[in-house]
Image 1 (tube, rainbow, N blue to C red):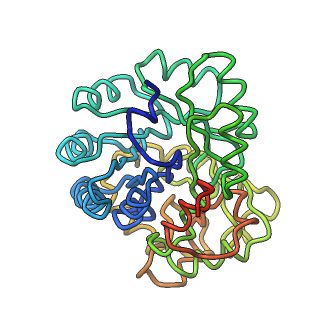
Image 2: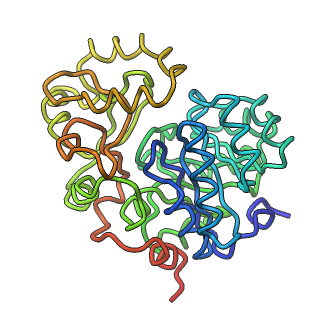
Length: 328
């Protein structure tokens, strides 16, 4: 039995686990209630557990998933998942076979996000139940290095695994159909679910994504987490990415020295985001959420994939699921 059959969802549509409050319980629950697989993105452990409980309640008892960013995962996150009804966990930003083992001991199905054949082989050898193959066109933090369908083909040829989900470039039913015909077991969409009514992103952030005419890969928002990410422009990137989309070299070097900050409580990162300004090139990975001052939309990361250029509206999450699944 394939991993999607084991999970037991009606439509092969998975909502990406956008962390920090973008994909919280309301969004994940709405996606699962509509027959997809909703995912709660990583949060501080207690809030994470609360949002997982909310997602399950909103889903009507359907499957839900939890997303863990490996560099920021603590024992408390694993314990929160174990106490919740989430029985699917996606890993992003790295791989840890001991973490996989811990999660599987608690009966979780573990999916690892990969971008290359070597990463895919490592994850499968380390016990992952399935893989999320990320393409370079995806939004947020990137492990993808080539277009999603090319990566899917390359990884399938190398591993012969049929438990491959594909992320990046998924905005319409036609995108989903093409991915499934190429051998994906399901599609994973981020930007389409960013632009939903239930998403926790700031409304001005959503409108900026709809209006965007380009996305680009950068390292500007890397303090505490030096990893490539795809965003749309704002005042911070206009000022600091003019000469190099990845940001000033000195700032990137400084960011590389702050990787140890990932061990600090996530609440500290949230407080740091509130102090950011486009004038000072010291930007962490937090994105602007509903309820935050609107000025932060120009001082924090506006994550979005290339599909931002093809999505023109904010819709209910259930509508997004049906659109991606190609059902009325």
